[in-house]
Amino acid sequence: MWSGRSRALLRVWELWPAGVPGRRLLSCNAASQARSNSPGCWNCGVPGAPGLGDGFFCPQCRALQPPDRARDYFSLMDCNRSFRVDTTKLQRRYQELQRLVHPDFFSQRSQTEKDFSEKHSTLVNDAYKTLLAPLSRGLYLVS
Image 1 (cartoon, helix red, strand yellow):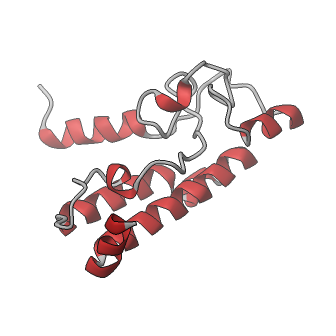
Image 2 (cartoon, one colour):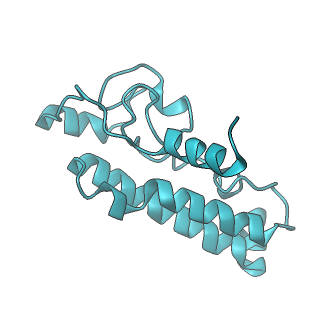
């Protein structure tokens, strides 16, 4: 029914931050709550939203969530926690994540989502650079 390319596009589309009708705008109070570590989505209030789904977007309203700074680089880049890393797979994952969270894709979004996008993108860049180079990867494993 679906070709491989169609399935891949559908999979990306499901992860892509789509605008949702009826999504409420942020008030000043909501924006300040967004920066705190609340247990739910900062935009729609769904409890436990940041831990659900893909971890980047709320499964209910598809708003970009704050990055999890405690998440290690290996799990973020979907690699085994080992010195040996498939650099081709690492590069594909890096490109996939940047297509999801790069700030250029959030220029028409709220300031909160723009800020989260910058933080996510920086985290992905740091993870990629660290895991790509054997020396920095080894030092990261030891730390």
